Length: 261
Image 1 (cartoon, helix red, strand yellow):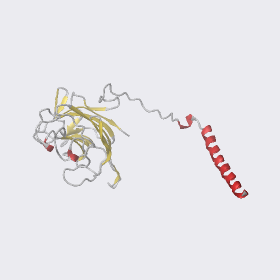
Image 2 (cartoon, one colour):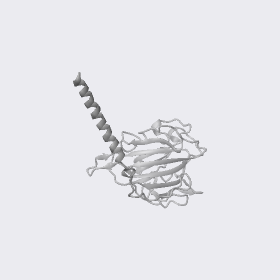
Image 3 (cartoon, helix red, strand yellow):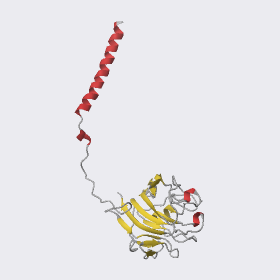
Image 4 (cartoon, one colour):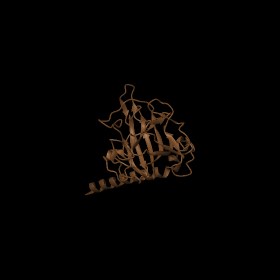
């Protein structure tokens, strides 16, 4: 009978010792042990209103001119129209893209489908935001722009889809005639020297303030026909599509980008 009592006493003593050690550690810890003071983040002034460019943004279009844009096919000056502070697509000339090349970034863009838009499916207010342009036409990585208010089409081709790869989690489209917004975080793919993919591309998209693509991993470039695949590139322009459907052209305003490390 004495042996079990000794064993029980030993267990209690061991448990008590462990508890005392934890208590002692907690007692000696200080709040400053987990405080970080440097490096101090640089100061950035946010826009005065929602969607307005912060102080460290590169303004790509502010309603005045197309100085930051060129034609995608030959890099000549962009020939779309600026009317009353709004950028209007000119379908006769084709796609435009930024003069500057980017890698990882945060982007804000606003667009408007004409109130009197006609057509259906992919032929109704169609355009595209190419997050990285890898060729003069529709090569690259596209977030779809389309009238998706009451317009049936394949879901991985509706507004805010990663074209042919990922439907939006919800349809946050507004009626034609209303201004709409995309807020995008783009993390470009990383390639090895031999062209193999070290890390895929990821995109996060807010459509009209609603999260619709949550750090989606792309399988490659977004293609109209065929399976996606990657082609090596380093930095790329941001491209806006001139889609050749018969509906009236859409318009853009308030486009800015913040480069990310």
